[in-house]
Image (cartoon, rainbow, N blue to C red):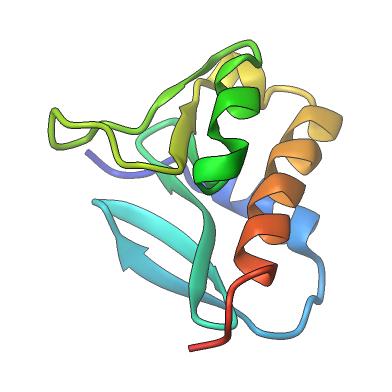
Length: 109
């Protein structure tokens, strides 16, 4: 299944001209890496966000978020956000910022 190009464009806009951001094909979609660490991505129509183990409970309490489980087993520290949760630019920017915050806390690769 191809990934949602419109959502990828909106993520690019939310990331702006931030240094250290690279795009890579990953998880059957596209991932945005910050200093070598994945922060957000797109699989199908869903936003993937790397929130880390410490941010998982709060992220899961948000509307339209669910565990990232593309293999049938949830990945620790990652969530999917359904399209309804990223329909507004402000909501998308908040999710992207969560991914940036976590990836930015990790050592560069």
